[in-house]
Amino acid sequence: MGRRLLALGMQDSDFSMVAALESSQSNHLGEDVGRFLGQQENGVLISTETEELIDVMIDFSNPQGADEILDYCLSHQVALVMATTGLEKRTISKLKSESHLIPIVWAPNMSLAVNLTMKLTEMAAKTLKDHSSGVDVEIIERHHRYKADSPSGTALKFGQVVAAAMAQNEHRHGREGLLGERPRGEIGYHAVRAGDDPGQHTILFGMLGETIELRVAATNRDCYAAGALEAAKFLQHQGPGLYSMYDVLGL
Image (cartoon, one colour):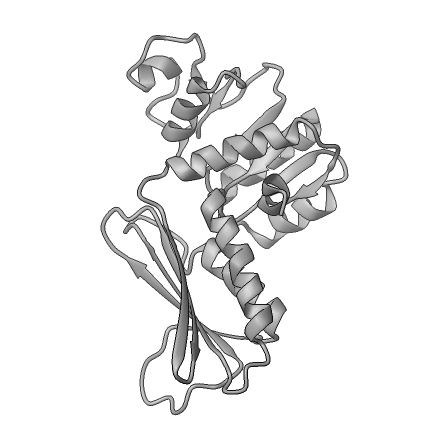
């Protein structure tokens, strides 16, 4: 994600890259970002910290890195696009409680298509919640073998959207054994990890005699980087507060 974010950001004339931050264990520290991407040198070196003036920071890292980036942005009054998933509860709490200090876009998925699909999921859930035969909701997500968290943060967010609309508040992760008839009020989650899949999510609404499936799939990681860049542009015109990709999309 860091590579694609840098590459797309360098192609967009609305941005001026001033820093590219990595962990202290990275093998790329000290490299020029342009050369790192196989392009001409641009004078920005990959480092663990920066003293440059920053308008907005985009974080695609890990929970530990997200903590450090959040603290940096709060102490330096820098707008933040938080795109890291699997955040610790304390980080989520700080995002919410301290967002009155800086503008923050926080979303489990930066893809514009995924967030539009979330809105469609909300519409379907609200419409179907009183269906006479009942509605079974299953969420199937598929990602690459290296993904650490299961189910994905995006799948959990889809579940939260459905739960809020349909009051289906029992969340079941996978099934095995003789479990009997499926309870009416649960949302099922199924995580597939295989190969280099950048991400697929299917939200299934099962009824008697008919089924609705909403599916969104990425063919590469550029959609996540592009969405994060759009969120960064959005923040340039916002005051302190906690925003979502719905706000970025105007939904």
